[in-house]
Length: 350
Image (cartoon, rainbow, N blue to C red; front, side, top):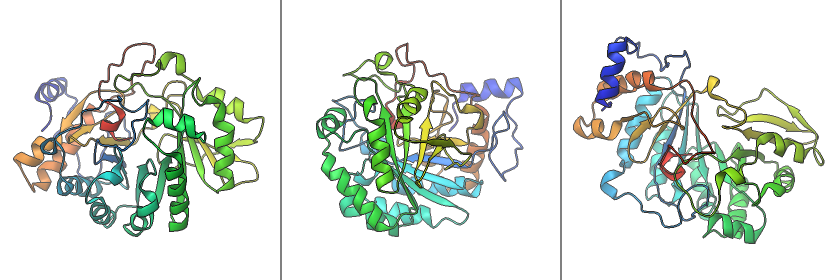
């Protein structure tokens, strides 16, 4: 159910149009939305320093969307023109019943691509089943190749388990696998070239991500640890020849080709190289809020609507159409201030 104050204000300003065609989702700035990211759990078996606090309190079951509700929302989005859905968390593979959800979503008529972001810990036993369920591409988080650093950055993770997961994913036959590395100055900024070398040897893609100021974290100072994409590219030049490319995976990464390899190196730069002008994404949180922008709090409470009007597809679709007017022109990230976005990345959904 859309937040009433925001809705009334927009109606008064003449920004909301009730007669929007249900053939697609377009915001006030003419950007079409064809990509949905869905967090299916806020829980994770890691406690990465940039993602969540060490002592996290997770949502009770009653406040989390059921798998049936998630599948229903995904169906509505696809019927409104969304072509790509990414399943995220927390760690999505720790949620019971995830394979059934993947099968349902992957079978939706009109969906071009179902993808997933994972920390890789569950892939040694689940990679083949995830691929069989219809997931075409995987993003696997890997911030460092150093076991001690990996333990420090994840607090609970075992790098050997993740490396086994990457091998299992390669054997399972996904169309492409991409590594995601959040780069923090003083933690892992000196490993970018080694991570690219690791990806090249295994025919993987890799994206380097500037840390996003979501939720309060302990253990590091975001301002002091900020390391911009341009610095990473400069660090890579000593070992690799990178050629800019217009290729896209549908997300915010700006890609370069590694000369002599199939590997693409991407850079997600919310601070230093804003990408909002081409934003085609919205996010569904595990608590059922539709986030129109990663860096703003404007949202729509879909959980309330789903539970007050269960099974009402026309009402849900209209709420999604109406919600597009809330999508801001750009995010407002600022690493030099305390976060104005208090939800952690694990709540947001990647």
